[in-house]
Image (cartoon, one colour):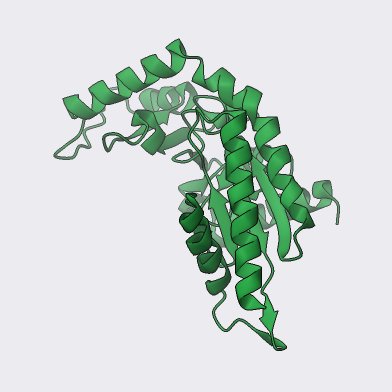
Length: 262
């Protein structure tokens, strides 16, 4: 199936589900631009725009979950418009907004949605709040973080270093256990095949990535093991030499794991 056909199939499934439930009962559709904790899964080209069209057609709010992809991970403060060519109704974000130094989350509402709500409810206010909403320390950390990112051209650096990062990782495809190498920006996944020993598959699908992670740690590299996948989100200031070191340690960690498994 081509990417275009697959995209059409997925957006059609979304529309059919909305119709099945009833569009008047569907408040919102939420999607990550890149499915991060699922193993850096990339949607086919045009998927997000097609889903947004479906949501507009049936008056469903489109929410883009950019907790991972915002604030530099894909080389922009927000990836929805710059990378995936959509303007969602709401963007949720966290983590990168302070570079993780202080906990903070936020959401942004589009002019389109805000004006629609204002027209229908001219005297209303958004009165939701939590005990720590607008915490001055967290907000100060976020503002300083954004100031540093702009001053030191962090976003431009990510866009410049991304091709080298992705290209070096793809060199790991020559390892017999590697099934797929995928990613975008400074996020990537090495998906490995279940390895067999004495003709038997590993009983625990998580064991392979855990072994790789353990061996990589002994070499000085941390990866995120998810089932049979190794996920990486390196610092936004990583340079070429550090990428070379990372790929070298990852290759050696996989080789050590293969040696252990026979």
